Image 1 (spheres, helix red, strand yellow):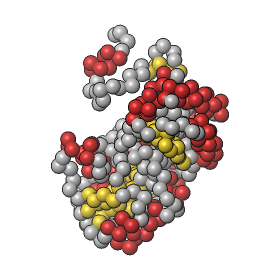
Image 2 (cartoon, helix red, strand yellow):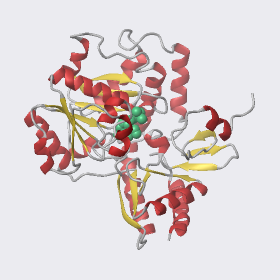
Image 3 (cartoon, protein in one colour):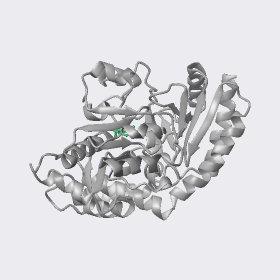
Length: 401
Ligand SMILES: Cc1ncc(COP(=O)(O)O)c(C=O)c1O
């Protein structure tokens, strides 16, 4: 069979945008993606928050190979004792700031959100949910219902009617959370909302209001987890202790995996009245669990969360220096290795992203704002590679003046 091409990609795969990036991937290794022509791209978005330890890490590949020799899928989730799942669940519950937590493995971030919402409703027997403007939690019906953006909702209405939306980072708005609310769903740092780092007292105030009203606190750490922001989980910056935490992306070390981790007493509800009311065939696939555990051990062994904090701080300063006095840029922000450059207009942001890509640096917009450019490099990125990215950024910005 002949090699697949961009033309075949457009012909045979459902297209999700009129202008896909269309890089023809040959292979990926460390912080680089290589295309068919051999051109190397620095992956400065980590495959959107997945490749926190870089692409194709040796320890992850070994773990996949070991597990593949033992078994692949053997049974739907929750029936057989599968060592890969059990080991990873043990590790995750030790890391997550969820008191006496247990893990439900699924396949993706959106599935983790769906599971968390269903569990919260079943446990509290309350119908309403609260989420925040600028949030993004995935594209299934329930997860999409948790996004306020009319732009993305309109074509799919009617969505779940029981969501209310509050302004992110606004303490006054929290009074609207009351005892009819099953759960409050929040990203500790909004990712697709433009890498918005809230004021230090925001998440503690959300937690306090949840405690006062009996609403569960669900933290969506799908994008912010696994060392990205300088702590293993972003909610640790503010000592939050969610009732349920949603994970995916870097959780699987490059393979598909999602999870929600909740307090045992809450999660118990899934096994009764009726039992089997939330199940999945492939959730917690043994290959994904083995890969995810190996990736997590790399993050811990190499203290990549501390590294993310250190190199992230330095790189933020570098970015501020590079863009100082640039009239097209209005803000540069971030935490750990999660950065945003905010442009005054869409055309400037678009030109900058294209100029970077042409020079071999992959960065991208955020879903909610075409003026905000996101950067989230692998946490293993070397100083030389960061210097290479800086030179590309300096050169690309010349096209935007
Ligand atoms: C914060 C957040 N939650 C949930 C999701 C959905 O994850 P998935 O694409 O795996 O369904 C995303 C995806 O970008 C996300 O950023």
